Image (cartoon, rainbow, N blue to C red; front, side, top):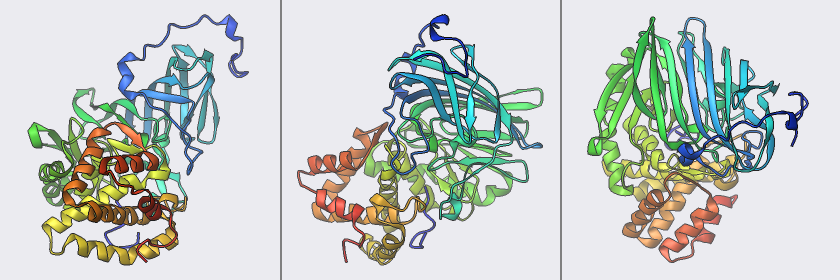
Length: 470
C-alpha cells in the first residue's frame, strides 16, 4: 500500500439447523485436488484477531457479482470451496451486515445461517473432519457500506466497498474490508484461487484482481471475467465498476497488461500507466521475473494499492514512482506475503526500498542521500506510531513501517555490499513465491543466505522504541 507521501508523515448439527447428524445422509466428498494451489495454513492474527478464522482454509472463491449503478445495489453468488483445518461443525466467515442473505447451501443442502454484526456462522449438515472439504454457496444482495476502521491514516478510515455518488464503486481492503462485498475468511494467511464475474450495464466495466479473460453481452448488460491462478490474500482482492475504457499493452516476454481508465482521466492517467512495461523491466533486472501471468492498472480512488495483478491508483498518487512502488509489491507482499499483520513491514520495507532506488537511478541524489533524509523523519515516526515490528494497532500502514525497514535493508546492504545484497533480495522473492512469511523465517533466511548473523540488527530496527542509529 502507498504511504501518505515520500518523506511526509504519513460433532452433531447445531441447534439452528435441527435434526441430528446421524439422520443426515452424508454428501459425496468434495474433491479439493483442482484447488491444491489455494491451500494455506491459516493462523489467528495477533493484531486484528476479530478477522479471519484459522479453523478453515478457503481454497477457491467463485464470485458472480452484479452491480446496478442507478440503485447502488450489489447482487452476489459466492461459491467457496474450503478445507477444514481441524474438526468443525460450523463455518464462520467475515461478511458485512449491510448485505442481506437470500440463501445458503452446504454441499447442495440448504442451511440456516446465523449473523452477528459482521460475522456469518453457517451450520454444517455433518461434522467435517480435518482436511475434509465442503462447498458453501451464499446468495446475497443489498447496498454495500464501507467499514469504519478507527485507523489514523485518512485513506484507511473507511475500508472495503465504497459506492460513489455517480453510481461507480471501488473496494480496497487492507488490512481487512473484503468482507464488505463478499463472504470471506478475511486474513492474509488464508490465500485462495479466484474466479470473478462482474455484470454491469453496457457502457460500464467491472474490474477485479487477476487476469482479464474477456467479456460477454446480453440484454443490455456486460459481464467481465477475471481469474487468479496464483493464490491471493483477501486484502489484495479488487472490485470496482465504472465507465472504464480498456487499453492493452505488453510487458517483458509478451506479458499481457491491461489499463482501465475513465475517459475523463485518459489524458493524465494513460501516459503514466503506459510506463508499466518499463517499470517491470527495471524491477526484473533486480529481483527476477515478474511473478504472475498478467499485469495491469486501474485508475480509481484517492490512494494506492498493490491489488494483485491489477494495481489500483488514483488522484495525486498516479505517478511513475508510485506505480513502481505498487509493482514492487507484486514480488514483495503479493507473491511473498506476510502471514499476519504483525509483519506488514515485510511488504512495505521492500517496496519502499525499491522505490527509493528507482529515485536514485532516475533523479538527482544518491541512495545514501535519500536514506539520510529518511532518517530525519524516522525518529519521530517511531516515537508516535510505534516500532515497525510492534506498531500501534490504530496506526496500520503508518510511515514507520516503510521507513524503518527500508533503513534496515540499507544497513544490511552496506554490510554485505551491493552484489550480495541484490542477490539476496532476488533469491528471497524467487525462492518464496506464493508463500506467507514472517520475521522468524526472514531472519533465518537472511542469516543462512549471507552466512552472517543479522538477528540483532533486524530485531533492533523492528522492536526498538528509539531509532537504532541514534
